Amino acid sequence: MRILITADLHYRPAERAAYVAFAESLRAAEPDCFIIAGDVGHPLRLFRKTLQLFRDMPCPRLLVAGNHDVYRGEYSSQDLWQTQLPQATHEEGFIWLEAQRFTLGRLGICGTMAWYDYSSRSPHLPHTAADYRTLKGQMNHDADYVDWPWSDVAMARYLARGLARRLDACEADPAVEHVLVVTHMPIIAPAIPDYPAHTRWSLLRAYLGNLTLGDLVVGYRKVTHIVSGHLHRPGAWTVDGRHGPISCHVVGGGPGALQALCLEIV
Image: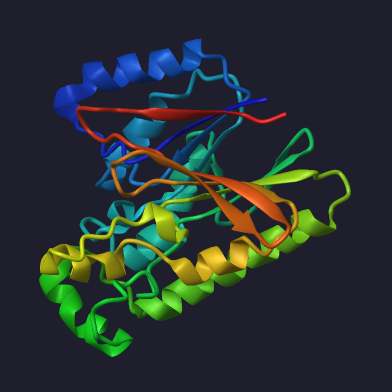
């Protein structure tokens, strides 16, 4: 079973020809399923235009949003998250993985944007979670452009609860043998870059992933694959799940260097 996953497209109209060629190359690969792991396009009209690039792909198309997709503009972040993005996703023929799991043969697919709860912070720095809440405005543009009313920790926990419900459903489903988890933000420690000699990058690490969610996911018996985006740099690791090894990837690329990951899952 061939699963194609891309991420961090950040659609740019001036580079449309490159995006069209990329979409055509993915169609030519004849995947059994296509997934976008967040940061599709902003504002909403570009989110839609990105999804329309893949409208002729005959396989199921799935997605999770990324942090840039919920940046305020014509709509508030809350409106984008709760209404506009799910609606646009459905209208363009994609499945919104925050709301449902998807089954392809004996493979279950679950996903979430994931959000940072500061659990990925650099261990050599003395800062607390409260410190990172204060520092966010200096380190991360999300502080300027995400205007929903929820704290980072509250949003992270909310998304984790939703993902856990979908994973529980896969665990209970005898038709599901393996589970692929797709997130925008990375959730395993090896995926998150560590630069102990660089203060700014060490501080930024707190906003790059959610290791609390990763600890939850690797505890599920059927999870065999985890794929994330967000970092614009590819990587592959095998981590020890509590029931066996789990294959983990980060999709690389971004505008000007569009990439997709191909998973062959039996």
